[in-house]
Length: 68
Image (cartoon, rainbow, N blue to C red; front, side, top):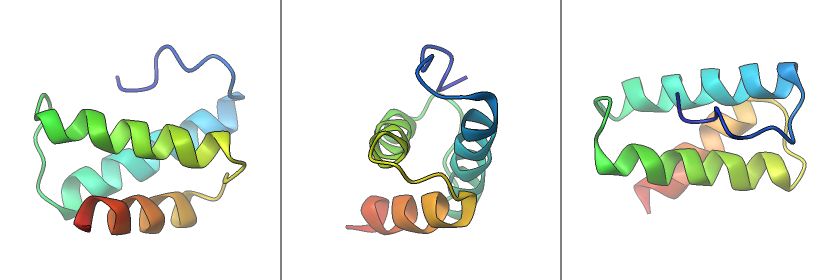
């Protein structure tokens, strides 16, 4: 679970982060344990820390970051 230590977020935000993470993992065909998955988690944490809470925005912005 990529966000188990992210205690600064409320439950809804964590759920949105997990959904965005899972969506991007599927979209770019990453498997659990792939080193790129920790980069994805970091990107999503950074976005959420800066105030982004919308699952679609988290997913789309993380996907763009992973593609660059």
